[in-house]
Amino acid sequence: MKKGDKRAFGELYERREPGLYRYALHMTGSSQSAEEIAHEVFVQLMSSHTRFDEERGSLEAWMYGVARNLVRALRRKNANSVVGEPAEPVFEHNILGSLIDGETVAELHAAISELPDGYREAVVLCDLEERNYDEAAQLAGCPVGTIRSRLHRARGLLAAKLRKTRKVNAHAFAK
Image 1 (cartoon, rainbow, N blue to C red):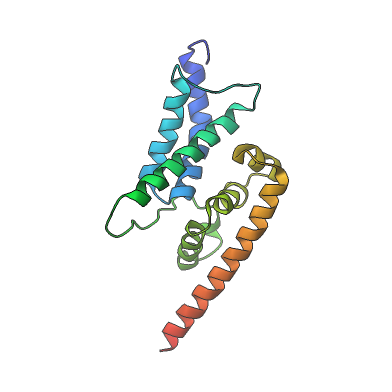
Image 2 (image 1 turned 30 degrees about the vertical axis):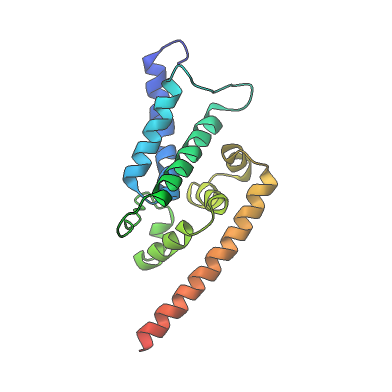
């Protein structure tokens, strides 16, 4: 691919784009943003100014790092702009969806979207993308222990949020 082999680039795109898209989708809650982020990772990879250095880590970790930075930039941009109602999150590639009903899935994804970035990233990589701790740590650019602690804390926050949502919904239904 480095030598301009278009077929090699195409194979890399086919292999890595779906995972990057799902990661961006779970991190942003927007299919349009996810498409743009996944596409931009490959645009940056093709750029003559690419900062990828194979001695510093794997290409996959670099790509996820670029995607993470693009998600952060998008969040900063959205935080600085005045917009109407936020778009309803889109979660098309949901692994958990077949296990629980649609309402619970919506509650779960709403709760995930409210997690701090590091916690959300750990949940997305480990629970939604089903990566092991080592892979998640490499892709997040942090130690395995950090992924484990973020995941533990994130799961606790999610459980508390979902319990609270259920109580509120049960109370509203009783009225």
